[in-house]
Image 1 (tube, helix red, strand yellow):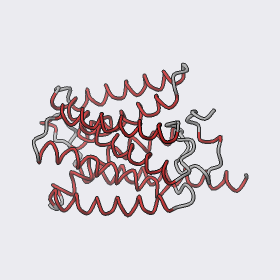
Image 2: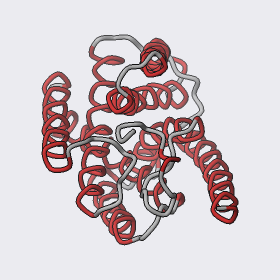
Image 3: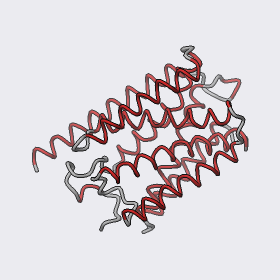
Amino acid sequence: MQNSIHASAYPATINKVPAITLGFWLIKVLTTTVGETVADYLAVDAGFGQTLTRTVMGLLLVTALTAQLNSRRCLLALYWVSVVLVSIVGTQITDALTDGLGVSLYVSTAAFSILLIATFAAWYRSEGTLSINRIDTRRREVFYWTAILCTFALGTAAGDLATEALALGFQTGTIVFGVLIAVAALAYRLGASPVLTFWIAYILTRPLGAAMGDWLTQSPEYGGLGLGAMWTSVIFLSVITALVGLAQGRMTRESSLA
């Protein structure tokens, strides 16, 4: 079925994105948290400032995406490095609008929602599907990564809107977004559109990771656990590296048996 989110129906060398497994979602949530904590650490704790951090991270993202687009197969390490960088840059875009330009979180959330819908509309009009099963042409990859960047910016704005402007708090925000993802997963199991439920869950992992990141890093007086941005980033990046290594090893074994 063309719209199924199970990428295993196609050879791994054709599809340029990983198979959608439990491991995929675990890594995705971890990368969203890292996007929040690394951006905060570099800009604030490390003293690089917002402008330098945005410039360096933006250049690294362009480099990673160029390599991703030019690769001929799915390279998990490259893919997830790109996702981490998109997460960092997406966070910084929203922070620049909110903190730098004073744009309301209500406005930025609505604006990124419209931008994401426009991206999906252009993608569907061009390709006839929003499925990630066959991200196997340059045009589909460009649509895919544009949508990914929009989801991270939107997720950051929506997460900040929920936890700060609407005063849900970090712990409650983590629980609420976790429950919403579980609802999307249940809807998929009950026969809802695989493409729709995938993208809904993908968007929701960003505010989940952001709320989780703030909960772990912020001091107890602000409702956090006080681990700090540096240690949270180190721990999560280590887990991401281990999970990606395991997934790459499994993919290599499956390819050798094919």
